[in-house]
Amino acid sequence: MKKITIAIDGYSSCGKSTMAKDLAREIGYIYIDSGAMYRAVTLYCIEAGLFNGKSICTDELKSQMDQIKISFKLDEQTQRPRTQLNGKDVEESIRTMEVSSRVSIIAALDFVREALVRQQQEMGRAKGIVMDGRDIGTTVFPDAELKIFVTASPEIRAERRYKELTAKGEKVNFEEILTNVKERDYIDEHREVSPLRKADDALLLDNSHLTIAEQKKWLLDKFQQAIQ
Ligand code: DC
Image 1 (cartoon, rainbow, N blue to C red):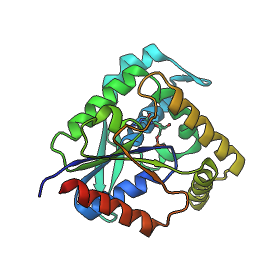
Image 2: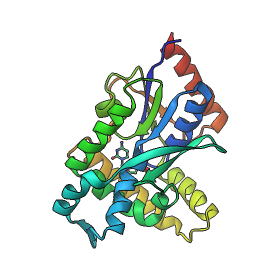
Image 3: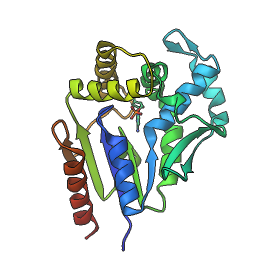
Image 4: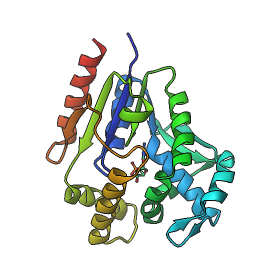
């Protein structure tokens, strides 16, 4: 059966990653979370002391980009990939509020995007891949056979994120998360390099009021149509 490229883009915390991971597992494709790569670079910057308050030492980061190696290792138990930064498992530490509140700054840097987009295109060379992010259908894989653009209301997304973080034991405040979701939407949509936007040929999926099962069926139907 022919293998295709599937690009899933959309707003933060609208369940893109879970959806993309489940789809990839179901159809036997590789799954790549491109947001995890921007998060890993952000974590590197925090650990290397490259942030000065909310601003970043751009020149230092530029000179250290070659030292930042990001890869994914399959978790045998869950069958899901775990993000590795310079050989260290960072799957949990890239999902904290500290990283979330700084990642948009890193994702707006053109030289970071160029380096990560190059790696993402390399990962997708053999097709049979589901990649999720913000610019996958527009910049990384403009020729992807199936493009999905996911959205949900900011309140619903903040609620999902709140539940996810409290389940992990993080002490978080709903209003703070909602503000973070809206801020990230704004920065993602308004940055100069690869702003978040729906590719003209992407299918729109608003999952505000869809169950996981309904969403899964919708996606599998679209996948079946795309491989015909
Ligand atoms: O999907 P996420 O919340 O884990 O993404 C983290 C950040 O990275 C988010 O602020 C947007 C940015 N990002 C991006 O600019 N381009 C991508 N392809 C993926 C994520």
